[in-house]
Structures are given as structure tokens and as C-alpha cells.
Length: 173
Image 1 (cartoon, rainbow, N blue to C red):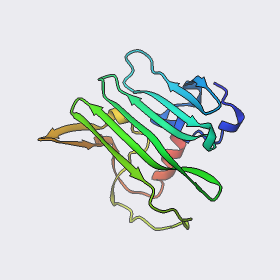
Image 2 (image 1 turned 60 degrees about the vertical axis):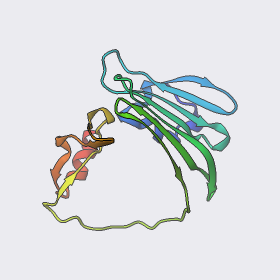
Image 3 (image 1 turned 90 degrees about the horizontal axis):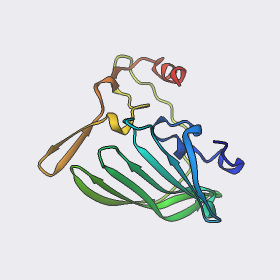
Image 4 (image 1 turned 180 degrees about the vertical axis):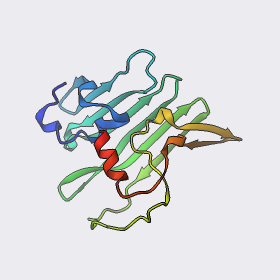
């Protein structure tokens, strides 16, 4: 799919689950919003995703819905936006989750924003790390203890830190 030119810089949300831009389909467009869908092949483990971008707020994300083949569904919906240094950001986001383990909801609220400085620090070589880049939601393991659901990344994410680990990930993309 060829994205409209003004959207080409606003596509970070469309990289969910490692999707390529060509996998997205424009479902609808109006003066208020764009709606894109990411459909998966029959039997594919990765979830179906629908993303709404609000055209009134520089195409900022307005809603993301993720549907899994097992019936689980998660939705994030922007309730308010705040303009920071000329760019619109979601400032209040509601989430709802309906899974085989139960349902839940919550709200994220932007309390403050400030420009950050770059931070550099050294990670000691040999330190055990968990690297979840490139791991889809469907690969995480969930188990229930009473009313609590624990979600853990797959074993393949556990590694020993080495400086070239970052370069290895970049080369695989």
C-alpha cells in the first residue's frame, strides 16, 4: 500500500507486531480520521490489528484494536490530546482488555512532559538481559495464579549482554 505522503512520517504505530507497511489496508478515510487494518493469513498466529489515526491532531493515534485468534481482544482509545512543542500527543488513553483469563480496563494520563537529554551508559558485558525486540504478543506465555495473570517473555529472549547485541538486531531487520 502506498501511504498518503503526509502519513509516511507518522507510521510508527503501523509497525506493530513487526508488520511491513505493505501489509496494511486503508479501511476508511474521512476528514476526521484514517482507519487502517492489518489482516493476517488464515491460521497465522499473529493478531489482526485495526488502527485509527486522528487527522485533526496531525494523524496522531486515536485507537488501536488488537484481536487474537483465540478470541482475546485489547483496545486502546485516546480520550484527550495535548500539544507539546508543536506536536500533538495522546494525554489520556483508556485501555480495555478482554481475554480468556478475564477482563480489565484502565487509564493512562500524561502528567507532565519535558524535553529529555540523551543519556549514555555502559552495560557491563556478561550481564543477563531480556531482549524482547521483535517478539510478538502471541509469543509471550501467560499463566494464572488466582485472579492474577502473569505474562512472561519466551526463553529465546534471555541473553548475555555483549556490545554488538544492538548491531546484531539491526542487521536482522
